Image (cartoon, rainbow, N blue to C red; front, top):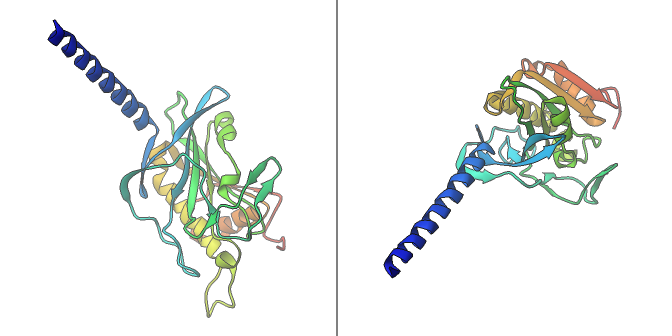
Length: 248
């Protein structure tokens, strides 16, 4: 009788852990994406009754060498957690604030990352992609300042915010004969290439990428749309409160 009771307890514990593991793996797989940079596990929030998958700090480029062109991130087969906001690119300290959005000093040079907000709706058709380039005079700013969840839910679009090199590391040049400069713009082109390459993997339509910029980000968006280097990467542009004629 005692042995039967012990056996029943063992079986109960086994089924409990099996059920927990099964549910965890099933739910976890739904919040994972596989990209050219590796596999990432995000989290889910509900906005306006729409489930939004959030992935923070996904690297699209390797840690950039100073005053050198960016290169795509190599594949990492280890599943990486992408559930917390990550650092922006190196810039002057002091914190950042855009109205209701605030971010304490979170900066580093291994910063070529992006955040994704993906709505999970009944439609299986590939969704349009909106890529947001933050402002800040190309001297300060971070992709983590802006949460794209509400726009993703209301517009049924994938929203992606990107980091790019800033200030002297992103835009300093004494002349093209010494170094080309505009590395921050090259970072953005690499981010758009990464998004185009990986769009299908998160149900995005790579032929419907809208590049959105605010302030200096608006100037960047227009400049990239005019460049031959972005051929096939940008379908539309939304420029908010900025253009290439502005001086910063």
